[in-house]
Amino acid sequence: LLSNRLFVSGCPYNIHNASAAHSIYSTQGAEIYKIQMTITPTNCLRVIVSILLYFNIFSFLHGFYSEAATFTHQTAFTTTFSLRHKLTKTTSSKIMSSSSPEIITTETTDFNQPVCLYHQVTIPTSQDGPPAQKISVEDLTPTLKSLLIKSQMKNGVVNIVSRHTTTAITINEKESRLAQDMEQYFLSLAPPDERSSSVAKQDGVRYYHNDIDQRPDSTEEAQRCIENGWDIHDENELQKWRDQEPINAHSHLLSMLLGSSESVPVVDGNMVIGQWQSVLLVDLDGPRDRTVGIQFMGYK
Image (cartoon, rainbow, N blue to C red; front, side, top):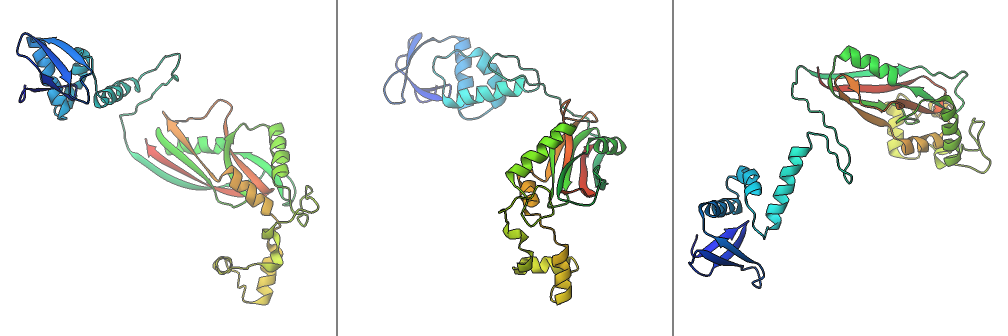
């Protein structure tokens, strides 16, 4: 009792008489909620706990309070805290409910030696012939599993990144006829330029990127050419650079759509991927040998 006022579940209430049965009315706006409470040791304890919760003192008592207190009116603060408290209890177990997802949590508490390894890996093409702007799919999963075993990492994450602007990294099924479907579908999304060497090139299709005779047309691209060993201020060198530059704008666009990296969790020494899933390198301007970056971060 504080100056003839009481705090129940974080809300102030007025006490109107001093008899054994007290009438308590909410002071929030109109007198809407009426609570009849008999003064007993148990009820006094509930009042004390309510006061402590209102001032955010000894919040760890809330678990006991939520089981013991049976007041009619609860504030948003109390309700929110109760939900958060219950969620903390259930996220570490299997939730079974018709309206909730099934969640199985694996908690790792024993962390040993940390692991941070990076590999640059060359992936040989599985296709025959010289580069012809073909689309092919290479399975990185066996390489990743082999490197994971060598790393001795038990829990963590493996990051895979493409090191080319015309390749992509994705997770899906590695199946030969699906690979053919992927090629046909991707080429329908971004058909090759009519000036390209692709057998799938289409008349009337042109991309700005493929106007090689007008490049480099920005100081940024000119600087990149110089940094990569091309002295474009020399006319002969400039022409050599243009001659080797492929007509492959559609490959760049498809790479942007698919994405250049993936991250896969590692739990108990195994990558967390589905039964039919594989980590795939999609070459959108091949066939060519390609390189990927693979980084393991976690604990042994």
